[in-house]
Image 1 (cartoon, helix red, strand yellow):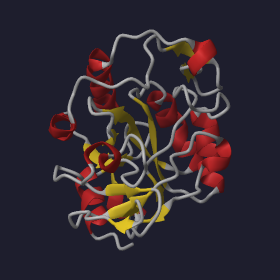
Image 2: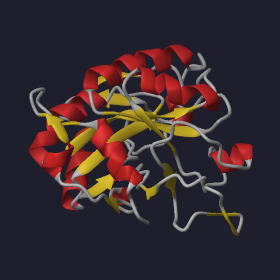
Image 3: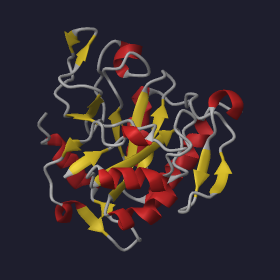
Image 4: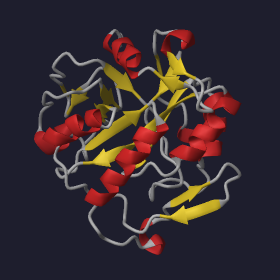
Length: 247
């Protein structure tokens, strides 16, 4: 199964206004992706629309955000249940630095419906850090029923390596790399034997599917329920599949 657990939409100020939940799913389906996460910066407000449209494109949805910790480390916070994701979204927004967004300088932060009509705009600038540390965010996401994957650990900004100069232990389901094998500043990284994945980190339609990965699991093994209008993933099964992922 082709999977991609890191994608943005028009909600992220650095994302393309044209990359709506609908166009993300369209591009994902065209790329052959079957398991796809929507992970805008510090917000999940486009997840309800993503949920409503996912079955139309035969894509299993994962909901979440790319949270920015107080150390400026990006962490993928992933949920299979929309209601739990949206509860965490409210919690995360309460931790966001209360600095108003200036769309003319930093970009729009739009959340939209199934037809790309504007529902609303987020007031606070979503690229700012949350007042929660790398040492606490994993357990907090777990409390809300989600899993965590540190993002782009081999990148020179907003990563564990850039901010801490090492990978630290934690309740990580996997580590996301931009490139494999995992190298930082020309040297192999000590990834503490965590599973390693790549993801597209798509901000534009042409980015979708550029770094998807193959997950060795069948659809029927992964699905917990389809009674909510979308296919809800069994996260325990997903974590086990990730633990067996071979790069």
